[in-house]
Length: 260
Length: 247
Ligand SMILES: Nc1ncnc2c1ncn2[C@@H]1O[C@H](COP(=O)(O)OP(=O)(O)O)[C@@H](O)[C@H]1O
Ligand SMILES: Nc1ncnc2c1ncn2[C@@H]1O[C@H](COP(=O)(O)OP(=O)(O)O)[C@@H](O)[C@H]1O
Ligand SMILES: [Mg+2]
Ligand SMILES: [Mg+2]
Image 1 (cartoon, rainbow over the protein chains, first blue to last red):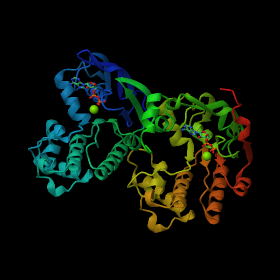
Image 2: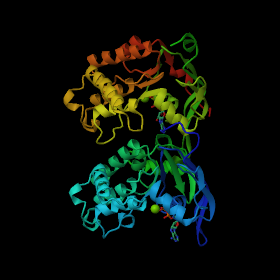
Image 3: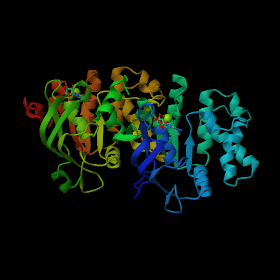
Image 4: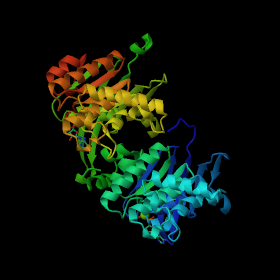
């Protein structure tokens, strides 16, 4: 983490309704370059809805999301044009879906999945794209000989690795992840977590990780936000929240797992 | 260490209290510490003394900002900056920075990161978060090796993740990791608890060396002989027990 003067992301008062139901009710937080923030809470607490509003994948009913771009200063992500937002989402941002099927193109090769974002940025040289894709498959510890296979033939853990490679190839500065390890076998989960930890630390990535699993937060995140019924009930350093939880709901969450 | 730095405390704790509120057990209040006031100067080693449950570990965790204070202040002088930071009110970023450059902590138990080998676990505090350049990496590994040798960790274990190590081996990894940097403030929670006599005396030497470099050390030493050997002052934790009926 560098000694910057302002956060890379500022989220202010996000509100999101589904009909009369309030899914996210005035959530604010900041994220600094290189910082990993976990958003935890039980199913239905509004984590995914919040993440999608912050990542500009859905428009919130209230609030503002400001992102510090590389060259153009701070931008209001919901006030950008659709084209600008798409460019941002493909370059400086990454989004890792819980279900890899949503984040991958299932009918094209692993190499093409990784190369797609490079092509979107104007890279046309086939050899370079293929080399870059191969090097990213290696970085996410995939078997490079599978580069021409489609993700349809991959296991869940491999698909998730491929999704990560596809996102990181453009060296984004901010990555959103929604339950990146859930739904996988425990041993596959552990290896994927190790990979995510070394990638976020090694690349100084800022990341927001939505998870219902406190052990994931413990391993990956510097800071935590605890959500309940669409609101933030507690925030702090990850170890503070887990070792000395203050809010009744956080105490309940922490005491209901063995050793988070 | 210049003259002014030795005169100013590295750490000032004032009026510090801690109580736990157990919301899911009928909101019962558990007062643990009350009115803790102490200064620690560079070159000192304070030993926290008191029976089990007296709040010794809690005090170290409060200083490390692992636990949140109920009242009072904990002022720490950062290496680079002249101004003090109050740990009880600092924002998370400042706390993370303090843990990087000012406060080292040997917890009673090592929390291991899976798949990271012992040498890298020990070297990590020197490397920070971003990609380190190769000379920094070589330097950190060399220092880590020195410490592992001094603490008698067999070389065949250096690249093995400590998760499978014995309790005593894990503790020595934890110690090596915390002595690899010259932290101005060093917190030690029973660093010698499961060590044999040889490793115990290595830890005693490491503490002496840290003090000589100007660290303010605050420790819990279950072994009275170790305590007498390393402590320059003993803090009686009984003074900070909450009185019955107080809150
Ligand atoms: N597309 C939707 N339409 C209607 N209600 C939704 C929709 N998505 C989520 N919700 C509701 O909003 C609340 C928050 O959901 P979600 O953000 O998915 O929570 P989480 O990710 O924490 O499990 C839940 O009550 C959920 O049923
Ligand atoms: N996270 C916590 N939640 C609730 N109570 C705690 C917590 N940590 C410590 N305590 C309580 O605080 C008291 C002091 O514990 P501790 O500081 O570990 O004592 P010592 O290190 O002196 O043996 C004990 O009663 C312990 O149960
Ligand atoms: Mg969700
Ligand atoms: Mg203790």
